[in-house]
Image (cartoon, rainbow, N blue to C red; front, side, top):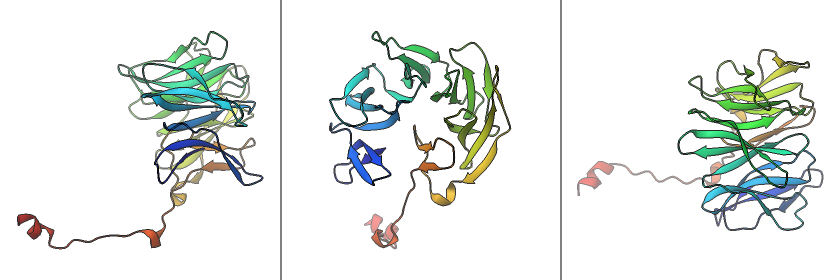
Length: 258
């Protein structure tokens, strides 16, 4: 998770052990660190950090042992959004000044030459590999508003729209039989994905409303789903009424004329 220090206002990456209730800090650089993404085997964490201006991609062992490593540097900001199931590829979002948000894939082989997956004048992002590595789910506004889509990987022209009335932030269940996303009205949605040679999914259904929990699901990796899909972890906004202070100025227009 990303955590912002209330005093320095700097954001770092932490790993929380839910079983033992322990929190371990993973990054220590004074730059901003955000959008952590676990490797499929759980051994590494990739994230985005602005060490030299634009956000670049780094990785480190999830145990915290050893130094961090630069995975990819670019002249524009880039952020990881997921790994392939065999950890051979990292999918990331690239902010291009001409084409806006695009989806790229970084091979984890020695040469690490990234390739474009989807680059159009529209905003594509939050790419997520299916557990079998055959599909990538993502969000795009090519229909006028953000919708969740699925395409084959490598891209072959096959495309399926998943959301029906706007959607964002797709996440796969670990067995690939369900795909989740957030609707425009703040509901956690799910579609069943049918196994087979071609992609086939059911109509979306609402699981629950996130609004009562004051969920904050604005950016990459905003929530996580457990392996069997029985629990969802997300960030909420908690207001402490007793700590809030307000100053009310009456007749302020008269004061402004003086």
